[in-house]
Image 1 (cartoon, chains in turn yellow, brown):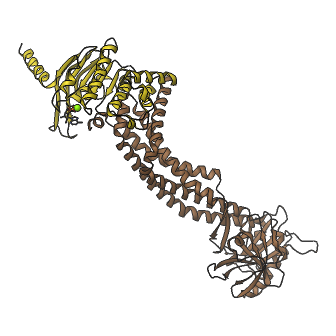
Image 2 (cartoon, protein in one colour; image 1 turned 90 degrees about the vertical axis):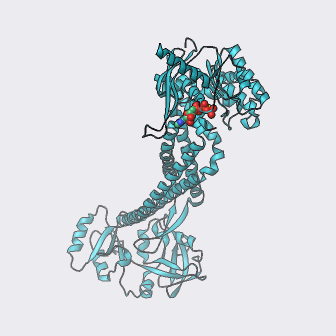
Length: 239
Length: 400
Ligand SMILES: Nc1ncnc2c1ncn2[C@@H]1O[C@H](COP(=O)(O)OP(=O)(O)OP(=O)(O)O)[C@@H](O)[C@H]1O
Ligand SMILES: [Mg+2]
């Protein structure tokens, strides 16, 4: 990856409600364009159902656009096949969700180590990497604990450690503080800001929380953005 | 190559996690575990049963012994032969004679005797064989393990070890009721675990009179010279108008009986095992479907992290096979612990009397039952594994 620029070009995303009929289409994105530069921390806001999560899934290669291009670091990922995409995701993207999705049977350390099973690192290297990631999120002292022995904020920290352990350039966060109280949320957000500033991670974070958005270097409100985009397109068409 | 190692690595990591969380799912998996256990147990029982029978029967017959019955008789019970016939047979040149120039012939009478136990609970039909002194020559494995042989002319019986073990009343010195008369148990014998150990032996004269058979017998055993051509002998006997008999090597006779029996058991056992296996398959399928739908988030998370669908399906398959292994062991081990070496009884298909044999649960038979179990797990796991592979990540992640 030469850079970590995220580019969405002329994205259309429609869902078919039922397989056979065409009239039941849900158009989520229509001719949508977006560019996020390497090193940015973008907060994606907007009303529920606008397609914020869908955008994250498209950027992260979990989903494909109906038409249009998804270009990450100069690579057009919407043309990759399923297994290439899986591999690409493992190398380039870290996800953080509203729920931590940690495995209850594994310790914090083992949870964080899990993505490293996809790498050629040996056992001690994996241990070392996971420990580093855990200390980065200030959870080194809880490495041996199981998720149920941790608080919500701590669980989310471990989830972030898991997202960054294989050192991806891009972090995609879908309402990462949605389940947390203000104080804990602020801690998590500071952590994300630190990862952005000190470690150069490009972060796209979906949030409903205006306070959370303040931590970002740039806020995109999908509702007004889409409106402007449409107006812009219309203008362009008129010219 | 490197790719393959990575893939295996992934599969192992996920399998390990699934195994780790398996104890939590034991309860929800119990139905499939139990049904697989049942299949393994039934399968193993059928195998051990038929195996035990074949071995017992194979031990029973002798190479150079000619067994003669009335032509058309399938078993000794249906046969009847007259003294003249026995004489004609005995005088054939292929029959070995002893130092007194008497043919080595054992004429035997085989009946179902109604045993009336003292308590009444053990009442059953027992195989009573009337024999003469020559008979012992045809039983090289015969061993008197307790007491003495019966005395000719007296109402005494010599009891086979297997049946003696099963019916404790059949012990030395005790008097038992067979049919309408009482008999003294004179001894217990063994015969290398052959079918004869399921029989009671007594003086043929007394059996003949007790069962109103005059001086007829049912079967005749003759010692043949080595290399006797059975087919030629048969032609000779068939050509003789005074004879109306069927001849067969004793060994062949018992082997055929074993075949009939095992065929019967397989005919009954196999469909039962098959239907049960099908049921277990459905149960395993169901359990695994439930497992992946309750873990759809977990699976989606793995995919998000970058685990390949293939690795995920491997972990699902391994879990299904773990389930099947536990089920298989649960079915096989109790049988091994409690039934191995136990003597089992069955109604002999032809004589309708008791036949005993050893229930040996060998590693080979256990391996077969385990293989069946694991196959059930494997087949039952395939569809759920495919479903897990195809699970749409975005859908699974969405519903928080
Ligand atoms: N698989 C699907 N089939 C049909 N419609 C879908 C599917 N997935 C998403 N949608 C629709 O797409 C739209 C956008 O969904 P998305 O989850 O991206 O919204 P969102 O902005 O993240 O909302 P929220 O803030 O509530 O999380 C919604 O109207 C949703 O119903
Ligand atoms: Mg959303």
